[in-house]
Image (cartoon, rainbow, N blue to C red; front, side, top):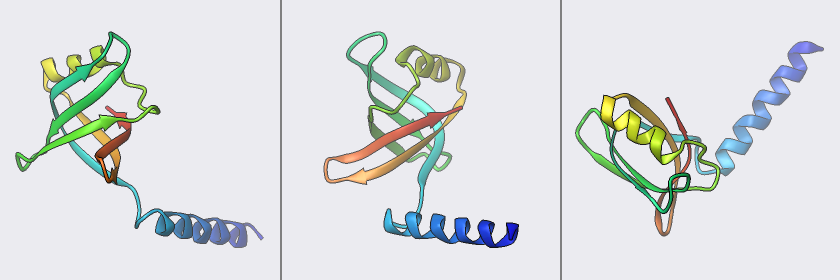
Length: 98
């Protein structure tokens, strides 16, 4: 019975990810720019990946990293992972992790 539940959950997850455009998109890199409208409200972040490509993201409302925390990552060259989606207006970050 446990295997059946796990299999059903796995199939459901695959269907949801497929409906969302093929899965989670993410990029890892170093923070090179942080734009904010206040000390707590992140507007955008730019990340450089290992190949040197720059990724500019608008910050979604679910991003919990503060601008000051991202600037700390920038100052110490600590990498971040940005989970994002492509929108007609550009790349939208919906989560950032260490």
